[in-house]
Image 1 (cartoon, one colour):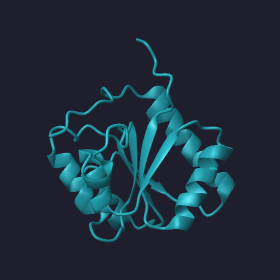
Image 2 (image 1 turned 60 degrees about the vertical axis):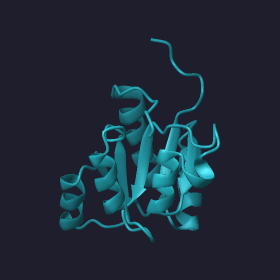
Image 3 (image 1 turned 135 degrees about the vertical axis):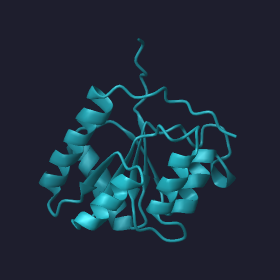
Length: 154
């Protein structure tokens, strides 16, 4: 199988600019070449995935290989987005990883019950965050076999 020479697109749904900056820094420190694409809320995430509105222009929204999802976002929260994505035949296979500060077993169980693939608690230190993201990357993008990257869109 021929490998894609472009860095994999990672869609990040995160509403806090500080967390976007930190995640970008974590990927850089981990030496991970990824095309990080950020959206700020669930509505934008759906627009991105369905290539609507500002993402309708060709090339503006490459198909993500992986989604990092903040569960607590404005307008349309991550839980609702996750339910919608899992209900859509064209998107349900997309690996989605929760990024959260919550260590609550209730929140973790709920995320898995509605279809999250993994739940990552945001570490307090950058070195710990780099280690977790490196591990996540190694599994999801170097070890696991994922479905084809192009998704049929309505």
